[in-house]
Length: 140
Image (cartoon, rainbow, N blue to C red; front, side):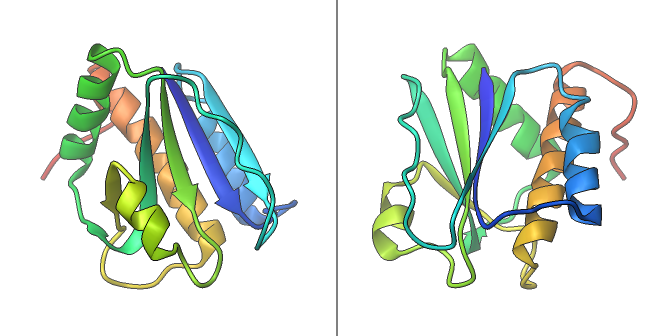
């Protein structure tokens, strides 16, 4: 199953970019990143079947175990691509939210988009580690 991060804005050479790279290179699953301008641009056509997850302040807050279990279910159900969309400063519009399979939030606080990308990369690695039975993840 391919994990595809589609993010508004360019991360460039930054500490956040280093974190994203550090975590994504550890994931055994195929990972793709598409960067789009803050507005406009063309979102690539998805693989079929796929799921679309929007990072959104109104989204569901999940534990790492629940997130891993969801990705594992989708993988086992034959989903070929999970697309994670990170919006621009104004977030996502109502149509995008309504069309998504899932909205998730990393807590009630607002996070800078570049940090959200790094946090997503870490959670994707953590989820793949949980599913592989790796001892990295420790629940409290």
